[in-house]
Image 1 (cartoon, one colour):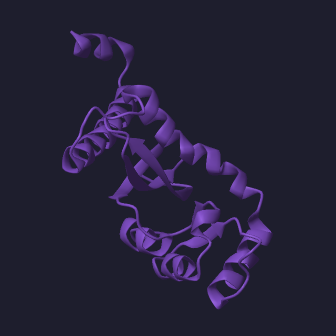
Image 2 (cartoon, rainbow, N blue to C red):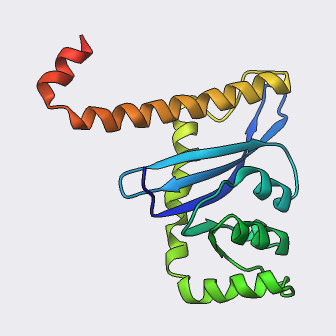
Length: 174
């Protein structure tokens, strides 16, 4: 599928014992929908999360202030993206950060599209809830991964159903 830009973010899902499982997601945003393409589990630094969750691509990648780190900018540029990361006021040094801030100063209006990428986490929370009824870390990771797969299947079904006329859809539902 084609995409307009990419989105990088993380969230924390709570387990039965109120432990947090942090999930880093790379999502692609196109005109019709938002779909995740890569996920990574773990509480790690932003540079390690970005190096493990990003795949080769092109175009802009939007991220929040947590990702304003020189190593993150370097990794994003090397993967083929143009980083659009809101700068933190307290951080101002480094070649890659200066290069990224130049992009942000020109394209700050596009940064307002970040809300579209947040819809992945909102959809998962609305569909499955925000708390996992698990105790083990491995079980929690498996369930979160299954939630993403179900979300992708749902998007694929929605896209494929649009291609049929309503007569075929009604027959298919029986």
